[in-house]
Length: 470
Image (cartoon, rainbow, N blue to C red; front, side, top):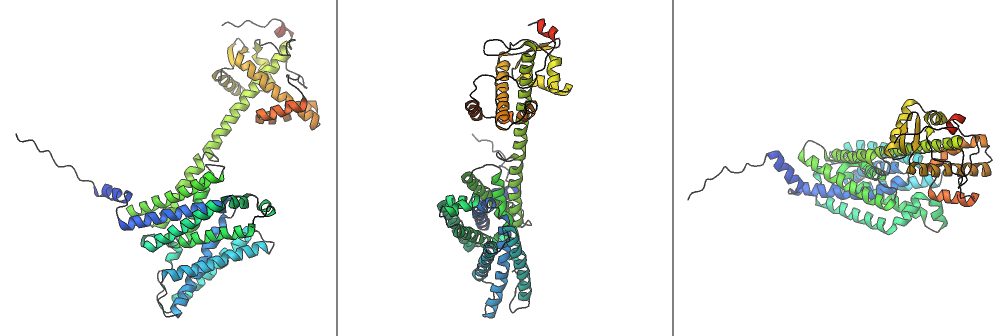
C-alpha cells in the first residue's frame, strides 16, 4: 500500500538561521569575538567594583587615555628600528608602559601634594590625551603607514584573533586570582583606608596593585572596545550591580556576570547586524543592564525605593490613625484601674479627625486602610469602633510614642508642650530592640500617661455613647 507523501518541511528563513548560528556560536570568528568580549566584561566588572567603591571611577578614564601616547611612541620607535610599526605586541607594550606611568603619576600627585584624587586623575587624563593626539599626528608623517592606529581609540572588535582571546583569558584569570586572594584587603582599602593602615595593611601597595589591575584590563580591552569606550565598560557593570546589593561579595559576582553578559550580548548583536560596531553595541548593552538596575534594583533601584517609601507612608498613616483613636479614647472615657487602659468604646469621628486635622480625602484613605488591615470593627452614624486587633496595635503604638517622649524629656530637656511633635517624627523608626532599650533606660513596662492634653468629645459623648448596630 502506497502512503501519501506530504510536502517537505519549510526551510528556515535566512534571518532565523543566522540568529541560530550566532546564538550557537557556530562561526569561528563569532565564537572568538563573543568569548573574548565576555572575558573582558568579567575582568572589567571585578576591577570596576573596587574602583567604584573607592570612588575612583574616573581612574579608568585617566588610565585609558594614558595608553594613547604609548601606542604612538611604540609605533615611532618600531619604525625607527626598521619595522613596519604594526606589531600588536609592540603597540600593547607601549600602551602598558605609559598606562603604568600614568598610574604612578596619579599616585605621586595624590600622595605628595594637596590635590585630591579627582584633580590628579583629571590632570593625567587631559595631559595624556593631548600628548597622545600630538604623537599620533607625528606618526602620520613618519616612515611607514600609521593607518589603523585610530583603531585603538574606537576599537576593532571584529578583527580580534586567537592571541587576543589568550590575552583576555590570562588577564581575567589574573584579576580573578587577585580578587579572590585579596578581597578582604581590597574591601578594607575601599571603605576605611586609615583603619587598614593602622592595622598594618600595606595600603599604598594595595592601591598600586588595584590600579595596576585596572591598567591591565584597560590595555587588554583596547582592541575590543577602544580606549574611549573601555571606560564605560569598566564602570557600568559595577554601577549596575550596586543597585542590587549592599554586600561586596554578591556585588563582585553580579558585576562580573553583568560584564560578561554585556560583552556576550553586544558582540552577538553586532554579529547579527554587520554594520553595527561591536564596541559601541557592547557598551550599549551594558547601558541597558545599568538602566534596568537603576529602576528595578533590589537594593537601590528607583522603583524599589518608591515602593519602600509607599510602604513607610502607609505605616505612618496607620500609626497616626491608631494613636489618634487611642488618645481620643483616653480623652473621652479616661483610664480604668486595670493597667491604665481606656475602654474600647465607640469614638466620635469629628473628635478623631480634629485630633490630626485630616482632610476628607485623607480621612477616607485612612478608613480604607484600617478596614483592609482589620483594625476597624464598624463605622456608623458619626462614630467608629476599633477591632480587637486594632485596639491592641493602637496600645502598642501609643506606648512606643510615649516612651520616646519620656526619653526626650529626660535626656534632651525638651518641654512637654513640644515633645509630642519631636516624638512624632521618630516613633515610626523605633525597632523592637530600641523599644527594649527604652524600657530598660526608663524602667517602664506600662503605657505612660500623656504629657500633653488629650482630645475630648464633651461630657455628653462620654456619658451616653451611641450603640452601634452589628
